[in-house]
Length: 59
Picture 1: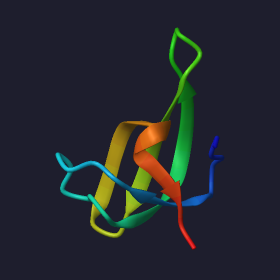
Picture 2: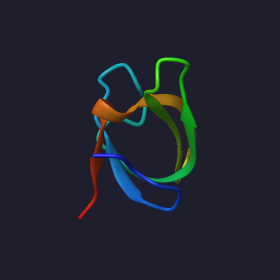
Picture 3: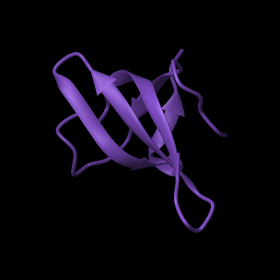
Picture 4: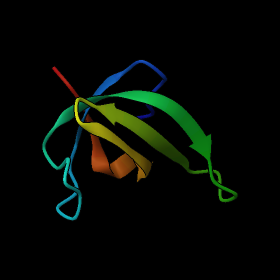
């Protein structure tokens, strides 16, 4: 599932301090392989370079 700017998402990345938190997609970038990566803004900061498979749509 592709996400767009403004979408609310939940991050699932055990190595991130934002694991399990809900944030908002602020930027979508495409890698040279055609995959999308995301910058997500959380209450306490932001995380960049997040792959699509680490995100889930927030309810």
